[in-house]
Length: 266
Image (cartoon, rainbow, N blue to C red; front, side, top):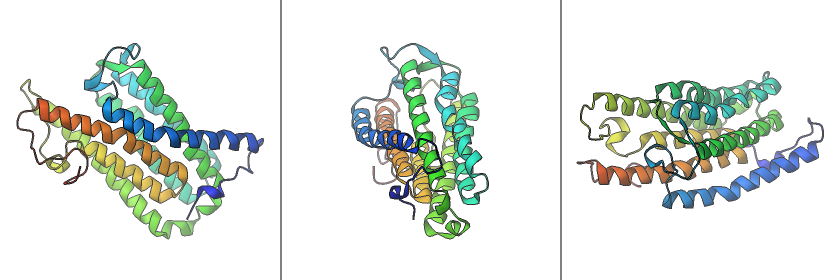
């Protein structure tokens, strides 16, 4: 099992400075995650239906998503250079890229080109993705010797990879159903799908993405990977709760038994 205690940077020049920056960023992100979670429970992030003045210029939706998500994809090309002969690590990186290539370069094309993303949201998401890719990428490089071919038979790799794929597919199906539902809905009244996980929760896309990055954390078994999962929940759980509340207030007939994020629980 990989632990953060094994983190070393002997392969890099000036490794002490790099390690100081790395550890500082890691613990900064650890401290910020619960603050972000608590804040978003009370104040929804101001994009989409919650957009409001005071967060800078409003940017084109498609361009905003491209700028926000592309660092997570492009920066994680660097570990491929160092780990291209490590099959296990390349599997990790391929799974990561399967998400972010879609999220940065495909998903934006499916959005309406409305101007509804404030510049400050784009900037904060951009910085998060830069730091997150740096923390996870450098961790994989530094623990390369741990990720052997034998690691692929470990329970945590099998479980984590399975959850990642299930979450990835669930997220894409949820997004597709939501898009199809909007096309089929000819009335002006907003409606949510009644298929798949939408029968049980208001935001299966957020639930599925959280499952996906839980899989990443279990698969990698490193502190940066678990930190990414915590940040995912800190962002998506409050937004799911906000969406659920909005649906109950604005969508007639929204099932009372439906939960926000976790089927039958929350």
